[in-house]
Length: 294
Image 1 (tube, one colour):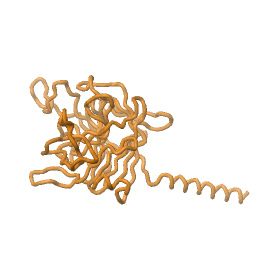
Image 2: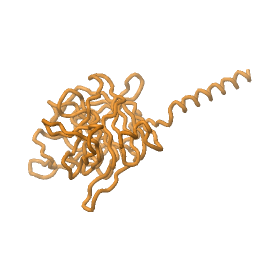
Image 3: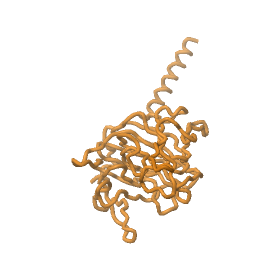
Image 4: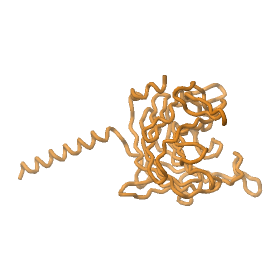
C-alpha cells in the first residue's frame, strides 16, 4: 500500500510538472470576478456627437459615469462551455482597465462579435479595441473615454470602416509603420514592402489599416499582441496585421517613449465577447518577427 501511495504521489508530481511546462509562463487575466480589471464608463453618446464633452439642457458639462459603477451591467463575466467569457454589451462607452502595467510581453485572447448595436453606431460595424501601453487617466481622447495608448483595432468584417489589427493613435500616441497609400481614398494601409511612415499625433494620418484576417461572424478570432522595447506586433489568427516601432507620444517639449502601461478593452456601442485572455513576459522579440522591423 505504501508503494502505491508513493507511486500516486510521483505520478501527480509528474502531471503537475507537465501542466506547468505546457503553460510556458502564461498568466490568465480573466476570472468570474473580473479581478484583474477595473471598470470605467464615460457616456452614452448621440448621433450628433462632435468631440466635445456632452452637456445638459442648461449647457453645463455632464460628468462621466466614472469608475466601478458598471451602469446597465455593460461588463459581465458569463460562463460558456465551462470557461469564463467577458461580455461587453456596448451600451455605454468605456473600458475595463488592467490593474497592472506591463512591459515586454506576449498577450493573447479570443474575440467574438455579438448582435447588439447602440447609438451612435447602430448602422455600423461592431467595434471594440485592445488598447496597450495605457497611461494617465481615461477621458483624454476624442470620445472622452480612454487613456493615452496605442489601439489594436477590434472590428467586425464586412464594411469599409476598418479591420481587426488596424492601428489608431489615442491621445497623442505615434509610431513608425511601413505603409502605402490607397490611390483612390488616399488612406494609409500597412505594407511590409512600404516606406516607414510616422503615424499618429501631429502627422498626416492618425490611423493605419490592416488586411482582414477575422474569422467568419459567429466564430472566435484569435488576437495576439507582442510588445518589446518600443516595438509591437498586431497578430490576427496567426497573421501579422501590423508591425510598429519607436512607440512614443507627443508633448510640447518633444516626443517621449511609451513602452509600457496598462491594457484596456473597449466598450464602443457594440456587443463583443472576449475569452482566454492570457499574458506572459518575454525577454526578446521572437526571432521570426525581427524582419518586420528592418
